[in-house]
Length: 69
Image (cartoon, rainbow, N blue to C red; front, side, top):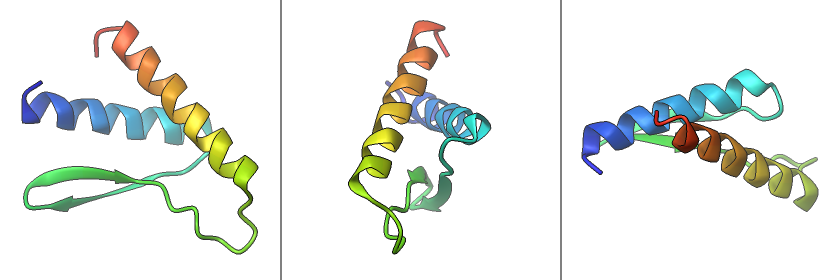
């Protein structure tokens, strides 16, 4: 997959996760690469939160792939 296609997919994934209101992700750009970030270091974060976020990421990524985005 070309870099621009990966960037577009990552942008769409970020938007889908954030639109769900079940988790919030941020992004940054390093060496002209768009990178998505999920911070899980909060003092109240438990493993169940991390697992739920991972399941959400997989769900939204699979949705994007299924729709050809």
